[in-house]
Image (cartoon, rainbow over all chains, first blue to last red):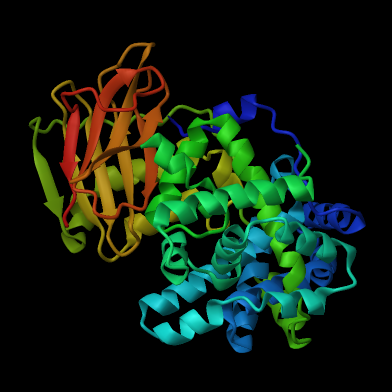
Length: 205
Length: 253
């Protein structure tokens, strides 16, 4: 068979990663594990735990509530279908689900772009994250304040590049265009910014 | 090239890369354990960005999701199959022939190769570290999708040393399945390696285990690849192909 790195990765004995602190994280992991065993009720409880995270992220990226709902539904069906393949050693359940949700939302936005359904001007306008407004809505939750605080530790360019890519669903090349900045600069600012964000959020290593 | 790809890990963690770049980054992560660790940490940090966008979905979504889940079968757990590839009977065809068919004819012409693929992928599909965490259908399902694609194109070649290399590619899926069967044994300290070649150069698509002479693999992000090449390399593969090509199968543009 082809070795595309699985062996190398296993030998490394990866440490458990988690940045979602507290009981929610543990609960999501446990519920996802039970969902992987086919337990419908555990999956329903998992839905209740993370549906606002999934739908909110889809809504932020896709912008249209009807489409966000469709994408969120796809995300949950995929979570159910592939729960059997989740490996807790490689990350938290919450992050795994958020990754699926973001990828699906971005795919939706990009396929719409490719099909020419999305006007360029509108894309540019909606892509600019209403960061303060979002932070405002999320105020009061400890972990939200932590993310906000950590985003503030980034340089303006790092923060803009990361939020445009993540919340706007843009590629780094599109981000470079939007920010009128050289592509290699954007690429490195994104990486530097994420490293800083990781350190600030104290991702377990 | 590797440094360029490594610099994309941040953009990859944000899903801010195109399909081709994603493939390159994930191939890189598969070859570099410390990079995979960093990538996982960045992904974990990125996921926290969804903390600040929480919004309650409409109540009807819950019922829809749970109803669809009730009628959705769960995927089989990923296995890291250690079984050897089933050996494909070497057809007694003239060597160094090269063919391309369109699908309607292919269903008959390809019979043997398709059956070999179907038999092979159950046991030999390599699932690698990052892919475990990737959303989407199983590799076996995706291989089946390529075989069944309406625009599937098939190319076959019998290398001088024996055996057969078959590539089934689908432009619409941007994927290809490579089936390598019964090549000459490379020796315990040598590996066969598969390359995607285009105008800009070549990229490794995968390295077979040392000493193996048969394997099946799925290539994603075929893009503008002109040629799928197979070379013999030191165990574990090389950064650049060692010529001559054991097999070189052109893909229709």
